[in-house]
Length: 499
Length: 125
Image (cartoon, rainbow over all chains, first blue to last red; front, side, top):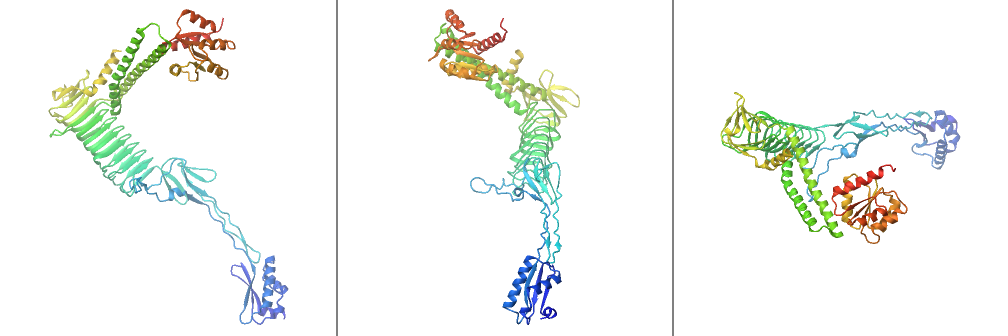
């Protein structure tokens, strides 16, 4: 068969992507005329690159055609293949799996789920791995059947940005520098130091424990805990819940605690009102409206010129200001001025323990002296026992002296950092008990404001009328006693003065 | 400063250890008799020793005599009930630097320790 004739029956077809060359053989061809040489020439003419694979495929096609020439329909044989390019993969920011998992349900210990403890937030700790910058995959070029290179797309490095809350290691590992809530996009990551809760703290959020600031747009439901390392701001009502903050706290709506709510505030507390709450405030308390049936300890002062205190007990260290204490109904309300409650309690405990310890020391010393006086010469065993008693007695006496020293220091701190002074703008009603200095004053008749309760130069509880600037003893309105809770501490103070 | 306490009574050793701690000495080792002390002084090399007189196995005086054969300088305080003059002289001749008679107060023991150390630190003339 002539070349032209062969080409009527056989042709080479290149695929659109030039990754395959196919020999198409029509029925009627003389199989003997379609030799490897002829086919190779046809492929060369089409520009198909000569490779070992091509030769093998051509040989196989020739054998196949000889064995079974096409009769009814054309036969196709792939005689050359290229390789497709493997495109590069761009680098990316890969967030650590721990941060993307759904929070686990906390167990209550008996197999049931504790929905309070199930937190909706995945927080990062300092040095925790939060993400990784995955490097790009370079890709590899392909080649078509004509030998032409098919260029692969290059994988580009990820351009990841972060701030100083994230540290990037040389291998692309990203670690949190500070504790907080990781926040990320495809190309950036940071640790957020403010946790903003758009709704309530309730079963949808679980308890909140966050190292930075916390803001709650709505309120905090019964039995839930919000614990923040820094400041807390709650816009809505706080029910019988617990709020603890290392910084300051602002409660726009107040607390309806039902005697179950607890506030522990490291610095300042500002609230609209407090109702049946137990609160300790590290610095200043500011309340707009009322403090009702609360147990409150404030280290600095109360700045609440429009606030009424009704019921409960308030203990405050510094200069304070209120509108009214008690009510005309005579509800029992206790105000303790010029002390730091925690130190005060320690002082009282030590003062009450000291006589016992001193008694033990005196008893041991007496026993020792008696034993010594029995004989001038002791057996070795007696000498040893006496030495041991001597040592024990010395230890007890030393402990007593140490306690006196500690009491003096605590007392010094209380005296230095407290101011027993309270300004009341409207009135102090009967039923109010004022504990100030070493006195306890039970108000018997209404003290009309504006007045200031303070200690006179001689340490007596007094009332200064802020209109006339006349100062009178508090005894004019109240029955004044020595505060029995101060007796033990008073005795210690007297001993120190005598020493 | 390394201090070796030699006394068969654990209670006495505890008292002495407590006094030494108050004086700021925390490197303290204990021996329960003279023999035990002899086995420890070589490796421990104390800077001061408090030695009881009446002990089983090897009493304090025998220990001091044996120790002084090879070491003339480490200060030794005898803690003892023996207050008689002849016995005190015997102890000093054996090489004891100071002594404390039981029963003693912690203050007295402190005083003796400080005295002994001060004397031993003075240059010999």
